[in-house]
Image 1 (cartoon, protein in one colour):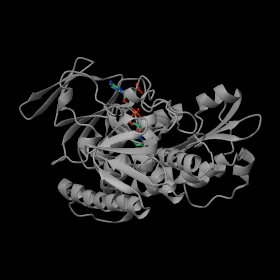
Image 2 (cartoon, helix red, strand yellow):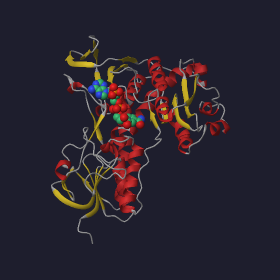
Image 3 (cartoon, protein in one colour):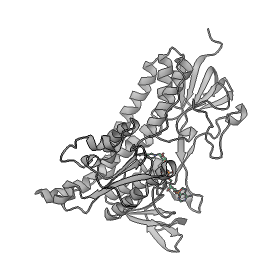
Image 4 (cartoon, protein in one colour):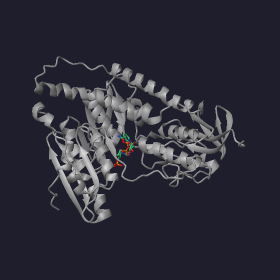
Length: 451
Ligand code: NDP
């Protein structure tokens, strides 16, 4: 019998922690988990899932507009924000129960409360000391706001999911995933949306063609996108918020949403006292096996600030559990991780951008097409899809695939398998397209973009 109360104590019941705990329990470990809020973590409670439901909801306005081209007369439509939020909350409540159930059915003990570290083998939760052989930190991250006067008047994605009323005029600050996604959500629901980005072009780090193409499509969809512009001050005025911008102008809006990045949740966890090293952003520093600077303390997911995506956290949690409790040491694979931005239109991407591929491989061949989606030919919507393949010229391997357009995430998921399997451009060419689809363009790209 172990000298500890549990073999594994997981702090945080989100995607990474839940997977790690379940798999460890399956390997025979005695597992406990502490969650201070609701099971499911950022993804289920205030991230991917509610966001995608709002994306679905907001897309109907485009569908109503497009229907006319196909002979429909759509009557007057009216959107009810509280009804949408209530429907979303019901679904989140259902999923949360499933998450908690997954743990309990795996035989793990759940603590509803905030856990902090007392020493390398002891956590304190609800004033009770609990000991464990291994501790896993899976506490995720949280949104950060820019430090400007009036920052307290801003909302973040956390609050956006619970607004009593939908803002009619909103500024979304940021050019990353969350800013692009929420700008599209509020725009689709009929708000007047201004998206501000401090740099030259949104989606820094993505392929340059994706960035400029998406920016153009967002503007066409009705979002007022202002780059090289930021907020300097926010104040309350009668009827709304007065927002001061770096170009000296002001705007009056109902809400300002900061989508300006996220920070690992490590404050007040007791890491310093125990000797767990964190970096300048507060992320737990880990090795390839997710082990921290303290031998029996591990960390997975956003709290480690590696690739902050749910499926990556899940894989890190699974690899950790197999390594420590399953006698199968393995590292989570962080290469060629596909991702989607659920903007409207959406972005799908896997592998290297053209810029990064040039750095990594020297000579690369680029294949690119833009075209009008078939649906838009009849609906009349001013919309173009972009698809792009980046190929290592020496080996003919496709090292990057990128798309802006409807269902980009669904399409790139399949392409990601080919890229993971190291498919060559010749393999893509040998694949028969499915006609008529947009995705078939990925196997019919013939002409290299001239350098
Ligand atoms: P990102 O890091 O993607 O984007 C933050 C944006 O805010 C950047 O454009 C950044 O500009 C800007 N910014 C940062 N600080 C300031 C500031 N002080 N003033 C003005 N602008 C600022 O963060 P997000 O919050 O959008 O998302 C966090 C992470 O969550 C993502 O990176 C992703 O890993 C994950 N995520 C994934 C989703 C998905 O898979 N669909 C959806 C949502 C989130 P700059 O470029 O100049 O630094």
